[in-house]
Amino acid sequence: MRSGFLVIDKAPGTRSSQCVTRVKRVLGGKVRVGHGGTLDQSASGVLVLLIGRATRASRFVMMLPKTYLAVARLGVRTDTDDLSGKVASEEDPGEVDEESIDRALFSLYGYRDQTPPVFSAVKVKGRRAHALAREGLDVRLAARPVLVTFLERTGPIKAGRDVPLRMVCRQGTYVRSIVRDLGETLGCGAAVLSLRRESLGPFAASEALPSGYLATADASSLEGKILPFSSLSGSFTSYQASLAEEEMIVSGSPLPLGKLARRGWGEHGTGGYVLIFGKGVVSFARVVHEDGACLARPVTNIILEGP
Image (cartoon, rainbow, N blue to C red; front, top):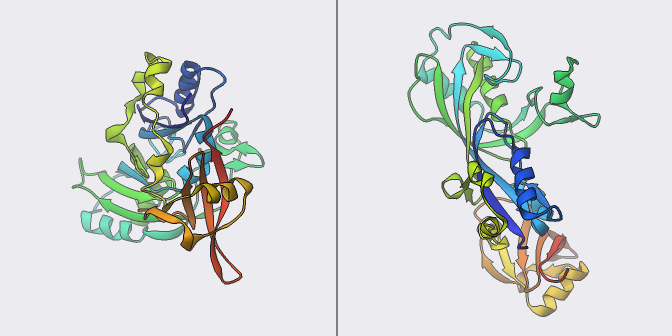
């Protein structure tokens, strides 16, 4: 079985876990299947499934930028920060205009502290916050730093209260929280009406398999859709290792970065990590400075050959 990435365009109403379970069942119970970050059940778009040894790349896929299209409904507050939840309050957004919305969006750019939605997968003392909230417990989540690199209104207000948005953000950012905070900045409240993930790093919805395809796919057809590790080479600055350097990687030894053969520059800032390709290994390595030298220290090695 090939290892790599299976990119799904998840339909609204389908759970991310259903896609993982279905692919695992089709490929066989012994094949490891993970994900590069789930989507809300009501959301649609890119869900990257990690097949076989690619499950070890999960943390690195999750750190890649995500692009979302959303519609924010002004004048409503819910317990989930989208319209799937219980409405806490609803009002006429009044005189909120496009200029004031654009100013509010500008204030949500960049690094900022964000409080995740109570109905989220954030863990509280070992349990998911959404599970505690559904039990009626008082869940209080701490704010945490997130990064929003792009946020804009993509069209006019519709029906006097629906605002189309495009957003690019990094790991840990909740679009529902951004929309909630937009509503609070405007003073009228807001919740997500619809949400779609257009891309995750190099993986785009336009090239993804519809989640409905999984219902009839067999192992052979799914395996043919698995993308190789080289799919990530455009996101991370990448290098090619010689056989001698590959032996150092497998042993966990750091390599002088300046002596590695560069394959390409990465398009995305990836927290100081680079990707090194060998004949039988792919390595995620961290760039470090030690004793006056710039080194690539292997962090996660994925062996491509052998059992």
